[in-house]
Every structure is written in C-alpha cells, then in structure tokens.
Length: 140
Image (cartoon, rainbow, N blue to C red; front, side):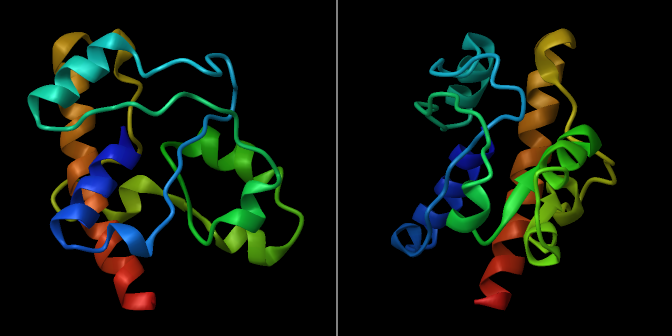
C-alpha cells in the first residue's frame, strides 16, 4: 500500500521517473499474491490502484535501494538483522518517523481491525509518505 501512496505523490509532483519504488515483506508468507482484497477496496476508494505482488525482502535489497522503510519495530529488527554494515543499517527507517499529523509509533496490521483498520492505515501512510517525500527530496 505504501508504494501506491508514494507513487501517487511522485506522479502528482511530476517526479515518478526519478525514483524506483518497491515493496517487500519480511516473512514472505504471501509471495506472488496481490494485496488483501479489503486493502485494495479501501485503497481504490481513495484513488490508489494496488497491483504490486508480494515478495520477500532479501539482502540484495540493501544494494538496490537507498531508503528501506519498515512499518513496525518487528520489521525493523528483522531487516536490521540482515544488514552487514553500518551503512546498510542507516538505510532502514520506520514509516511513522515521517508522519507530521499523527503521533503513531508504528503502522498497525489492519487485517484484524475491521474497516476502520484499513482506513487508519491509509491515513497514516498518506501522512508518512508526504513527510518521506519531503525528507528524500531534501537529501537528493
């Protein structure tokens, strides 16, 4: 979902060709699958089309990406445990660290919280992705 929100921001600002965006999970339980149908439904209501298929984060991702954004502390720890250098660790950031409106400490798993859980996650991601864009543009 986050890649869809961030891509939308880039398209709105005419900068989508300046970035390579991808999404990966740390568990790999749903490799090759689309996002949950409920997440796709709520995302579509806000104008996001989610077509990305799930893949698992790998060590090679440290070499492919300058920024690695995680949703919660468990993801942070899982990804950090794969890092081999301090430079790789410095690429890892929590999504909520870029929020300007919310004081959330993590992006919750929406799958057990009913419809409001999905809406809440999208709210957090919209806020955080705007902040992430500002941060990334400031360092380019």
